[in-house]
Length: 130
Image (cartoon, rainbow, N blue to C red; front, side, top):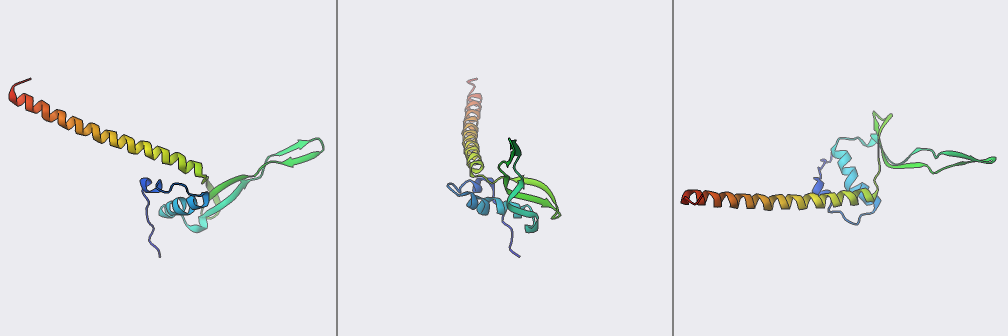
């Protein structure tokens, strides 16, 4: 049996420019398997709702079907989650990760400044300059 590999969030966002199917294969599928989802409980590219029926005159038309990248099943029978694998979601998460990284860098810089201030204050205290 192949060992399931966890992909940390910061690793996921290195896959820029992926197609939707590549996003599924390289990002979502590994996370589902890492989370112990069985293949039998995962349906990919699934239409989960027929389109809305509208009547115009004597003619009935059905609207667009609802599509999901994934449908997760409980015990292979009960649908419990729909996951859309749109590339725009990954792009949005990528932008969030960039913001998180920038905030972590800012936090690190501020922490360094605080440490320098502590040293400066202690130095002045020992010299009697406070």
